[in-house]
Length: 319
Ligand code: ASP
Image 1 (spheres, rainbow, N blue to C red):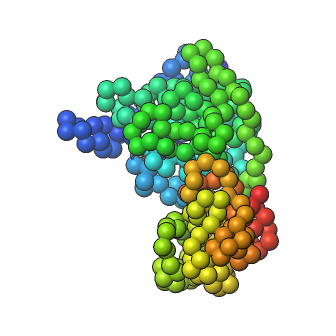
Image 2: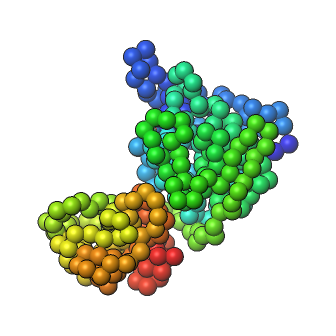
Image 3: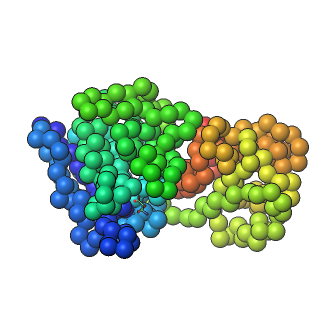
């Protein structure tokens, strides 16, 4: 009989709506009482946190990493329940840590536990099926929602309320959960993994916009920030005055990387005009591939906490 660890962290999956439709956290997390959905599985449920996921921090993510390591020798797989707003960030964070070699699956719900058509228990039991399945080995952290299995690196919340909100824009899902079978189409990629003991520091995200000048960037004190992610246009371009200020910040020692604001495709230094990608690369700005801004921010934060600097940092960020 396989043993699955459920680590509950809160989110809509653990919440309830009142008669006016206002959704709030329960004092007791109801997910702790939910069974595995199969007699062949043993479930160990841990009420780790009961937070709306906008309150999740990198320290909570590290706490989850530690909890997985603590229980790993007793279980065959792990399911985490989590609020959907920041689920992809926690999934990416854990995917970047040196986790034990057991499946780790994250799920949530778009409708709270007492709403009509609530998807919480369904997603939870689907996630348990995935975590108990031998095929889930070596696929990295998996996100299971609405009968789909997504890789932590690429998945993103695309809709405010729809149950099919989690999508993988450029690549599509890794697999599908059917009534009886689980089918995978793809493998997860190799990745560098860190064994962090602590996480601290501030990495901010700044989106660029048309007509943006360098004034906002001038107000950034490099002593208050450890790194900056720029959400750039298209293939990786910014307005010219922004490029000049970014160059000043890089000169002052602030690590800066960019991603595209396009939800599909990969940023790369193509354009040679002022503010174009070639110009930005020459100014020392790193190009992070295939991640959205929230995940790129975690990548830079993790790298800084792992002590990466200079060329080593750039190589990791751009790899
Ligand atoms: N606001 C909720 C949260 O992330 C949304 C959800 O769980 O779906 O905690």
